[in-house]
Image (cartoon, rainbow, N blue to C red; front, top):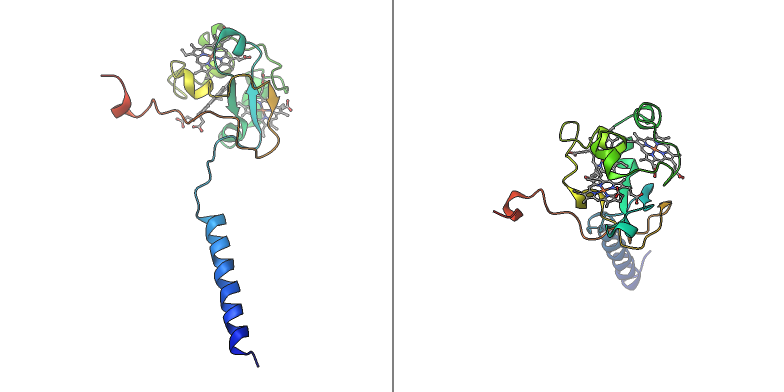
Amino acid sequence: MISNAGRRLTGRTALFGMVVWLFAVVAPTPAQAEYADIVINNYADAAGMRPVVFPHWFHRIRFRCKVCHADLGFKFKAGGNAITMAKIIDGEFCGACHNGEVSWSVENCDMCHSGIPGTPTHFHGSTVQRLIAPPFKGLDQSKQPQ
Ligand code: HEC
Ligand code: HEC
Ligand code: HEC
């Protein structure tokens, strides 16, 4: 038989468990940098632009590996492709899709150049949330300059 005190304790434990669960499931997490994001910063910092954050997972669920790593020729190495804006505008690398047809076009600088200045080129293998500056707001028409 459980005493009244025992019952209260059990009740509290359950309540505590629920609060923890609510926080884990419902509380908004600042979802920004994700596992497998790649920061590309061979030239950006030096040119006064924020480093590029390439959300690899976001793209991987939309395209087969082959599309980028065979057809578009991306080497399997973070920072290993000497990507420049001239090449992107010519339709190479990111520019094969970020051309206003497959996806939004190259004018949206901040969508790609969203890294914290000074972040070196690397493959982001943990869930640390510190890589990206505040999210891009430019596609909201009400916030566009008139
Ligand atoms: C689709 C993604 C994407 C968009 C949009 C984009 N960039 Fe880039 N940009 C890159 C990548 C990737 C690199 C290579 C980064 C590195 O290695 O440092 C780069 C590099 C650069 C560089 C340094 C190399 C170079 O070519 O001079 C500059 C400057 C730059 N971008 C400016 C811009 C500006 C300005 C805009 C908006 C008009 C823009 N970018 C939009 C992806 C993008
Ligand atoms: C939309 C294009 C795209 C798709 C699809 C894609 N990748 Fe990538 N991948 C990239 C880019 C861009 C890089 C970074 C290259 C750079 O920094 O120059 C990269 C880098 C990599 C790397 C190197 C990471 C490191 O440690 O340096 C590996 C491994 C990789 N991809 C595997 C895959 C696999 C496996 C798939 C399919 C499940 C895939 N990629 C799908 C664009 C893509
Ligand atoms: C094979 C086509 C393809 C290539 C190559 C590609 N992208 Fe994308 N990218 C897309 C598509 C499609 C979307 C989704 C656009 C949408 O939702 O309207 C996207 C979205 C994005 C986003 C926004 C992610 C988000 O959370 O909304 C970023 C940032 C981005 N790409 C950066 C890059 C960079 C940097 C490169 C080159 C290193 C690149 N992409 C190469 C097709 C591509």
